[in-house]
Image (cartoon, rainbow, N blue to C red; front, side, top):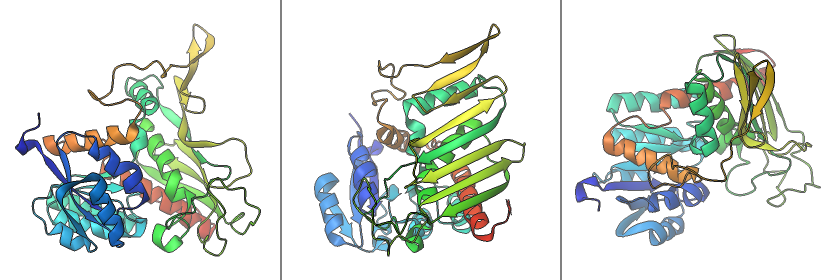
Length: 363
C-alpha cells in the first residue's frame, strides 16, 4: 500500500503518439503514480488522455505554462515534437518539476545545453527517454562490459536500419519540427546504446553523409502506407563515422528506407581487446578461450529474475518508467543522465553538419 507521501503526481505535456504508445500506459501501471494534468495543442487529445489515464479531478490544458503553475505536480513528461523539447523542459525545471523528456534531448547542442544548465541550476532531476537501455539484452551486455568481459572497446557499429518503414504520421517528415529524419529519430537510440556500452562520451571528430535518395519515390512499398514526397523534407538515410578522444571508432547507420535486407534497429556491435558482442541475432558474445574461437548466445526466452522487483523484464518502457519514478522518490540519478544525452545530440549535430559542409566536424 502506497502512502499519500509516496504519491508522485505527473503532468503530461504532449498527448500524441509517443505519450499514448509509451509514457502514459507505463506510468498507469505503476503503484503510487497519478497523472493529474494533461496538455496538448489539440484539446481533444488531452481530454482523451485524461479519460484513459487521469485521476477523476485531472486538469486539461492547451497551454503548457498553465500546467506548470500547478505546484502540486512533482514530475512532467515532455512528449512533444523535438523542436519544443528544450524550452518546455527548461520552463518545467524552473517551475520546480523533475522532467522526463522524450528522446532526442533537443534539436541541437545549444538547446540541449540550456536543458542541462537548467537542471544543474534548479537541482531538479532530468532524464531522456532512451528506453532501449532497459531491454534484457542491453542490460546483459552492459553488465558484461562493466565486469571487463570485452576489455577496451575500440570499435563499434550502431545500427538503426529499416528497409521501408517511413513514419507517415505526426511531424516525423517535417525538418523544422523534428530537426532531422532517421538519424535523430532512430539512430539516436542505437548511438545511445553504443556509447553506454563503451562508457565513452568524449568524441573528437566525425564525418557524415545524409541522403534524400528515396524521398520522391512514388512506388514506395512502405510499411506504414505511402508518404507524401512534398512533405518528406528530412533525410531518408544518414551515415556517420565517429572518432573518440581515446582513438575508438564508431560507425553509425540510420535509415527509414534503404534497399537492403540487413534490417537492424536500435542495436549495435562492440569489439574489444578481450571479446566482442552484437545484438544482430539476439545477443552474441565472441572471443577466444583455450586458443579456440567461441560464440556464447544467452537465452532470454526462458525468463529469469526481473531486473526490478515485480517489473516485467521484457517491457523496456515500463522498466524505464519504474526506474525514473524511483529516482524521483529517492532523489538519486536516473539511468539516463543528461550529461550523457547531450553528447548524443552533439554527435548527431556533427554528422548533420558534416553532411551539409562535406568537411570533418571537430568537437
